[in-house]
Image 1 (cartoon, rainbow, N blue to C red):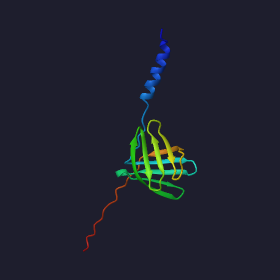
Image 2 (image 1 turned 90 degrees about the horizontal axis):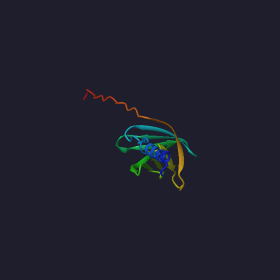
Image 3 (image 1 turned 120 degrees about the vertical axis):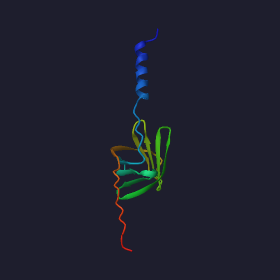
Image 4 (image 1 turned 45 degrees about the vertical axis):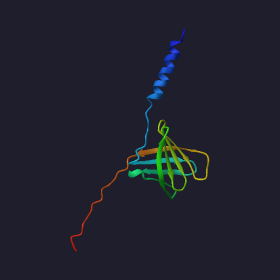
Length: 126
């Protein structure tokens, strides 16, 4: 005879796994602060039109595009860095240019980017 409590345990575990929240990044308005090995605080800004940038220790790099694949969001940077975000666990990993190993980064904060409208003034003089 089947052990009913054991089956229920696996069913609940499967249900919890399938209903786990996803943390997809908002590529139109997000500011991330990560603490990454050997770089310290890394600031990632996700802008409209898919523009991404990273800033750490006075270094500024622009993203070379992003894509999603198997629940991961991948962001390549012009300098060769690769940022990986695992949506299911909200985990951030970096592969720095010239390195083969992935570095786990701790997310410190994630906030929307507050965009300001700049007024347009037209000169009345000719």
